[in-house]
Each structure stands twice: as structure tokens, then as C-alpha cells.
Amino acid sequence: MTLWFVFALMTAAAIFAVLWPLGRGVGQQSDASEAAVYKDQLAEVDRDVAAGLIGLPEAEAARVEISRRLLAAADGQRALPTASNIKWRRAAAMIALVGLPITAIAFYLPLGSPRLGDFPLAERSRTADATQPLDNLVAQVEQHLEKNPADGRGWTVLAPVLAKLGRYDEAVRAYRNSITYDGDNAERRADLGEAIAAAAGGVVTAEAKTEFERAVALRADEVKAIYYLGLAAEQDGRTAEAASIWRGLLEKAPPNAPWRPLVQAALARAGGATAPALSDDTVAAAQDMKEGDRNAMIRGMVERLAGRLKQNGDDVEGWLRLIRAYMVMGDRDKAKQALDDARQATASNAERLRQLNDGLKNLGLDG
Image (cartoon, rainbow, N blue to C red; front, top):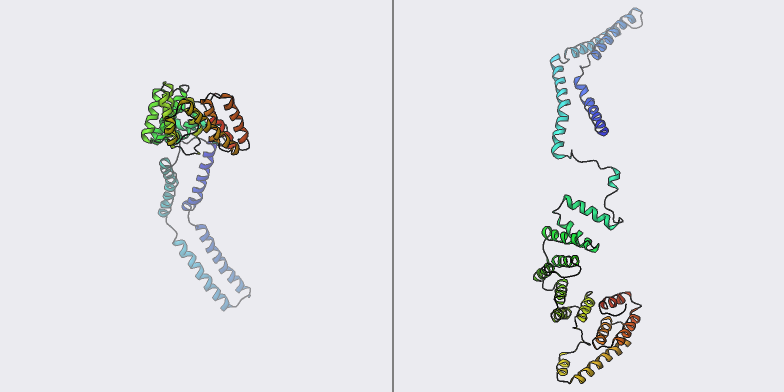
């Protein structure tokens, strides 16, 4: 309120400074005093002549010049504005004095923000800061979205953060709003299905499965959706179908796909893991073998893989295949030994060790 009062005083002072000359009478006193000076000069000339200080010709010339100036001053007095002109000036000053603030207010009300609240320094210090705790940043985004519920970009940013914080029910709502206000796509549908499954304790419910199916319909190679569809089949007891889904996913996966170890572990859990992948010719030949010969051939391939890994221990996928092969064959001790060898071989490379540990999840081996 004090600030408004100061602004009002400043505005009044500025208007007064500009309009004061319009309300004043013209310098009558100035003109009158000028005529009096000229009259005094004429009297002074007469005194100088009487005292013999100047001659008559010089005195006459001085009187002529002073008389001319006196007449000019008298003409100026006669040309002064009339009372009517002064009245109009004062009327214009009053109109400007009242009209200027009214005009300013008329422009401010539609263009300004008269209802905008204060924004003191204490409030400005609470703006978003990357160094604040994540919960505080989330709260600020949520406050923003309460006032702007149709901000699709805001929901898109908030949803994965809520899922990371374990607030799955809220993440589901955020993903739905993201789809509604920021557009539908396969990735968002897959993320929504994952949040629904997480809210259900990891169970792929019918609602979650529907979202995964929508994601695949939007993009046939949506990895997350395909993985969870396999998980849904496994949870329904259709392990063969789950293994088929995951096997198909691995066949199309690039060798360095970061999610590959997770899918491989799921495939091994579903009983779809085999010893090292066999070529079509080898599979065809194995079908004609007796069971003992077939097992011997597989063991021979496993041993060759183990020998190769001893020479080149950087092949994380090869270690995972070897460990799974031992587990499928029932050689748990050899699987544990292979695990120890794999960790020793990848200990100097943090990224390979991480990939190895990710691939070993859910295999039932001691960590």
C-alpha cells in the first residue's frame, strides 16, 4: 500500500510540474517593471544634462532610444492575454490533471495485472531448483498441474518420476493424463501398462495387458509391451507361449541391447533356455540322434563354449549362455563355478559386470 501511495505522489508532482505554467498569469509584473526602468532612465538623462555631464545632442539621442524601448514595452503590455484566454488555459490544465490518470487507468485495467499478488523475495527463493530434494520438485510440478490440468507436457514429465518413487497409483493417473493431453503412442501405453502392473504388485492384470496390446498395435516392435505380454502368459501358466514370445524378442534384438539379459533370464526361468544356440543343420541332425548321443553332442558344445570363454572372458552373453546351459543340464555346481569365473573375468569392467549381474537375476543362483 505504501508503494502505491509513493507512486501517486510522484504522478501528482509530475503533472503539477507540467501544468503549473498553464495556470499562471503571464508575466505582467515583469513587463510593468521593465517600463518603470525605462522611465527611470529618462529621468536620469535629464539629471545628467542638468549636471552638465553630457551634452544636449547626446542627451537627445539617449531620450529617443529610451523612448523607443518604452513604447515597445507598452505595446507588449497591451498584447497580454485576456482573462478569457487565461480561463481556457486553466480549463485545459484541469482537464489534463483529471484526464491523464483516468486514461492511464483505462489502459492499465485491460492490459495490466491489477489482481496479481505480491511476489516478495521469500517467495522467489522457493522457485524450482535442481538441487532441491526430488519430493519437493514433484510437489511443485503437482501444484502447477492443479492449476493447469491440461498441461500434457507436465504430466509426461511427472509420470515416470512418480513411478520411480513407487507412487504407482498416481503414476497411472499421470500416464493417462499424458496420453489424453500430450498424445497417444506405443511408449506411453507400455509405460501405463507397466505402472498398472506395478500397482498390482507385479501382476499383469487384464487392464495392464490391454494397455500392452494397445502398445503393440501402435508399434509392433515395442519391446517393453512384448516382454510384459510374455510375462502375462507365464503368470497365466502358459509357459510355452511365454518362452515363444521371449525367444522371438531375442531373435530380433541387437547384440548390445541393454534389456537383452533381462529377457534371457526370463526365458531361462520359463524353461526355454537351451545350451548354446544350434544352427538349423545341427538341429536337424540332432533330431535323428538317440537321446544319449544328442546329450553328448550338447555337452560337447557346452565344453567348447567353456573353453572359448577361458580364452576370451569379455563375452558376457557367452557366460550367461554357459551358466544357463549348465542349469538346464542339472549341473548346478558347474553353473556356480562358471558364475565365479564370469565375475572374475569381468571384474575389471564395471559395465560388463553390471550386464552380467542383470542377466543372472531370477536364475536362482547365490548373488
